[in-house]
Structure formats: C-alpha cells, structure tokens
Length: 293
Image (cartoon, rainbow, N blue to C red; front, top):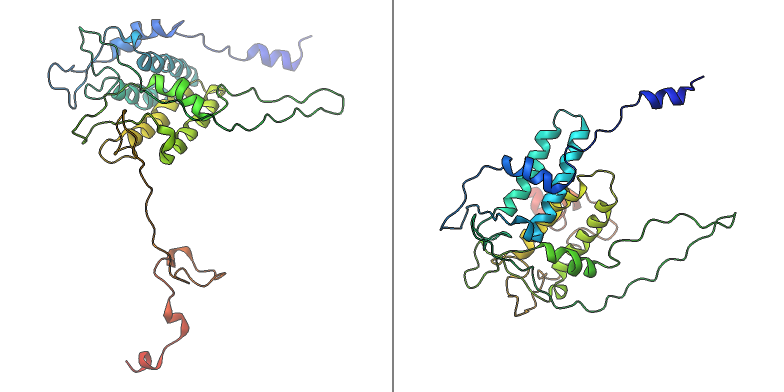
C-alpha cells in the first residue's frame, strides 16, 4: 500500500536539469550570441569594448560564471518575470561593467587584441586582531551542537586581498580626475573604505551559503559594483587624494559643537520632524512684546 507521503513525493515535480552543464558552454551558446552592442575603435569614453580571450580576465570569468548560476536559477523559478528580471538585474548590470571601454576590466583590449589587465595592487593589511573561535557547546547527550560552517575568509582584510581585489581590474587615473578611478595601496588606512569592505565581506559569506543560486551574481550587481564606484571615484571619492603609489589621509566631515538644548532639553520627547532649529520658544507662551504686536 502506498503511503500519502510516498504518493506526494512521487507526484512532486522533479527539479529542472540545467540547460548548460558548465558556464563556458553557457557563455558560448547563449550569453555571447545575446550581446549585440557597438564596440569602440578609437574613442573609449562612453563606449564598449570586448576581448575574445575573455576567459583570461579573472574579473570577467568570475562574473559570467555567476551569471550562469543565476540563469539556471531563473529557469527553475517558474515565474512570469523571471527572465526579464534576469536580463535587467544581472546581464545588463554585469555587462555595463565588463564592456566599459574607458575604465572596465577590458579597457586595454579590443575585439582583436588581448592585453592582460592587472588587479588593484595593495600593501598587506596589518595583522588583524581576530576574535578567538567560540568553544563548541556539548549537548545533554554528550554530542556537540551543529555549528555553522566556517567562513571562507576569517577576516574581511583576507577577503579583500584574497578575493575582492583579484576580481577588480580598472583603469586608474593619472592627472585628469573627472570620470576616472583612483586607488590606494593602503586601503585599510581609510575608514570609509574599510567599513564598506567589511560590509561586502558579510554579503559575500552569506551569498556563498544562500539557497538562491543567483545570490553571487547579485553580490556583484547590487553590492560590489555600487560600493566600488563610490570608493574608486577619483574626483570626489574617499581616495581622491591618493594614487596607487601615494597614500594621503582623508579626514571625515567636520562638525561644530552643538549648542546646548539645540535639539530640545534633555529627556524632552520632541517629534523628530521638529528637531534641528533649536527650541521652539513659542512653547513658552506669549511674551508681553509678542502679545502687543
């Protein structure tokens, strides 16, 4: 006799097998035929470029590998907007970076010429003061509790130097800073940069273990790319004083002392939308001068 659980398991839909067995097949048969853009010849600003040896660029190969994972995930999603969302949020977002002829990872290449592009350089970060591992707690029956798998990188500085920078290849500015990128080998000396990289590390570790197989692709498009655009901005970013060969400390925003009771007396429950202009003296009642006016 068939049990209800066995019957439901038998009637459950089997997961779709992958359309492409590996990402190289996906790239050659689906992704590259889909990309139809005008490639640059001389002028590089606001134009696209490409390299036939895309596989020799780690910053490109890692991205398209995760594009394949996201592609297979959207096929299994069985939702009406899956393909459209995949194209807009993943393919378009990745190739906006990959094909950027002025500053992207292929900026030295043309459709017929391959030139290797190095990753961003760095000085080793000072040895991080890592927290000691938490002891394993035994259960009542003597068995140890299941613990989360250890992170790929124990500290965000290891993540930056071992994974993030090797997949980041961009053109660094010389004299003209507008619309260009810059970098500092002592990135860890810049608080604004270190905090963002620590946040990226947390997203990276979560994406590695996510059930959603598009998580690593999303890591690039929603987190790495926006953060790096801000960090590398040669004209206005946190490294605007630096070059890869020279570190200059950049202070945060200054602040003048706040006048006493500017935001109301201590403990007063003033609505937030009313703060910022000092005490509302009308609350003290009409003065003699005010009453006669």
